[in-house]
Length: 358
Image 1: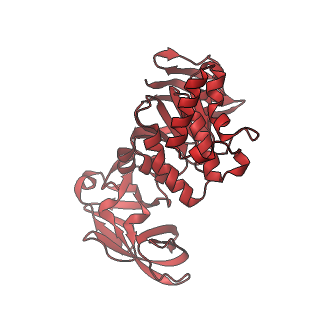
Image 2 (image 1 turned 90 degrees about the vertical axis):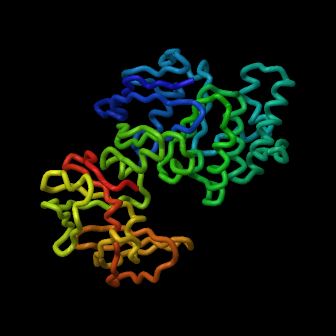
């Protein structure tokens, strides 16, 4: 049951919020809309839900044009990042509400609510009201209400954004299981690359109202077609710089160069943009392709399992992300090693040329 967006455009006054967009979102796996705030994710979600109308283009669901079909007549469920529950109704009644609107028999309502509550581990809370629940339990209730009606299209607009880290991890692990085999197209909007990587499926990267790439998540991550896609799909931000290709050598800075190996060797001499994800910049030499650079540490972040260091490399602000705990000292000079076999190269317009992938 695919969802097709055909030439979808959204303008508000003189501003274009969504540029011409063609997408075919498929059932059976997550379709992730990945991009920063204001990239256009929520606007696309609202148009699919029927809450906003496109300026141009069409939305098709199950072979039917639903562009002008009202929200109430679309078999669509929507979960926001905020806990949208009926405060004076019990958890049971919150979950049952779309089924009551559909006028299902009481026995069918009870069966579906019970099954969905069991899936989301809400059975002990069915008689409580939302105000008596934790944040995670409230969001579980909202998700339960979304999936109980067996919608053709389930839209999740950053549903985990306001949860603490532990709850985010827990629900992110559970969502694919909860929505598997339901026969619905699932669209999940997020600004977190980790969400896309953990959910799998397919990812559409969005930048300023444009879909820059769409395909299997692992392929989009490893083989971005352009620099905006690589930037959207990197956290911490991808390191980039202008490099000079001359003969069989790539030069980042005077004294910092490496062989132009592989496909990049066949590219014409000139200036190119290099992209290198932070996990390929390490305080320790990690491969035979490592190139040493010297930078001043600006900021450090420790998560317990990894170390992140922001450092100044001449006029560039770069980031290193490495496993383990490293004794970085803010303000101190530090050697870092670039695994240039993983470098991505782009032309001056930001289009991918070649590179080692990620």
